[in-house]
Image 1 (cartoon, rainbow, N blue to C red):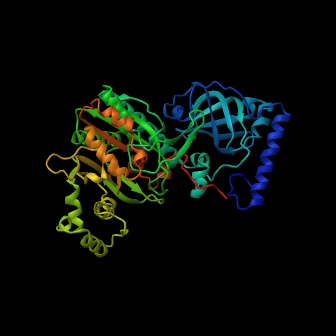
Image 2 (cartoon, rainbow, N blue to C red):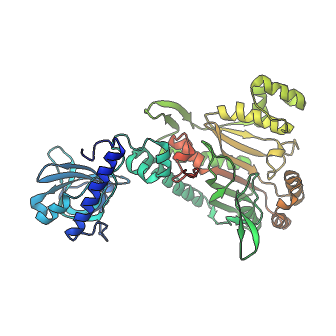
Image 3 (spheres, rainbow, N blue to C red):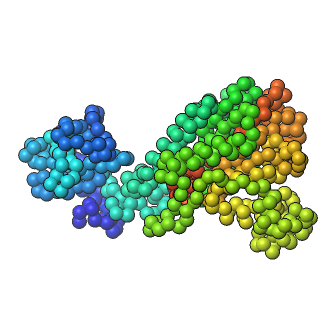
Length: 492
């Protein structure tokens, strides 16, 4: 059985593992370190192929991803994250001792090759090896060349195998990294200063979420992993920084789902003297810029595992903006906001929207919004002016004191970004936080309220869930497909 065959049983795998261990020992017997050391490179495999020229002297390293033995010569593919280059190895060119070492190599091994570039008769850019150096011996067979890693448990628990075997996964994570770098550049170019705020906090604030709790031994106090950086970034507005942002890791001890991971990446940015509408303009421009830069345009295709298009998200500008109450009335009835709580519960039964007995009136409306508006909105929509109970850190609307000046950007059935005209009245802010905390008044960040009393300028603020943004732009249907190492239940 060749190593290119599918592994069909535990016995087959055991045979392959033994063969590789034997080759490992043989390498050591001939004086080769199977886990070699430094190798100076002049080119990477993918870049060399992309910018190929004949008759160059090169030193290139990577993983063997294909190997074709032709007796006294071998063709192999040397690969990295960005592509591959073919290598031609001939026994006469490298000598008998080096050829003996070549016969002990397998798909999955890491090697370095020194040689000269040429093009084969079939037109394939290649390197003719003059010297081969073993860098690392792979002791286990690689994932299937044709199918990659298909088991989701293996894909998420052993991401390295997914990256080895699935070009699609490699492309997603490469683009995600480039997108984050471009977000930084975009904001810095517009005068925003990148800052860092505490991940360990005495009082977890900035959102209504369950935190992870820990204990600091030296200080003798309980602390929390942050659920959001908002209250610290606003302290910086008070201190005089007029444009700040943080690409942060935040943590919420809540459910795990297709769109939720306990540890996630978020952008928060604050702009003094702006408001929620100006922040909406910024977010719309930023996301369209990312789509045009990394997705080839504003039509974002999502495909299934067979490659068929399942949906197209149209990011063409301008994006729709609509009031929260108008959108709820569209799906729940024009009289919705005139109904009392009992009538709203009855209407929910008619609409098939599940609600719990303890839900308050505004929470019932929010449930209708989430199920009948948010989950069904594929193209971008800025939902504006939500009920004040939902956003305690936003400024009250001047004309209607029951709503706040905010937007929620919905794309592909999920909230991608909230944006506020930030509340800067310390007395109103205290009252809102007290109402939110209820009996747990100790959860109020008194230091933040103290800071507000020194004066915070009017400001616009945004949050963008980077993981959900990556899902939308890169066509992933699960957050686990855009997080390199998602949180999983411990394997039994």
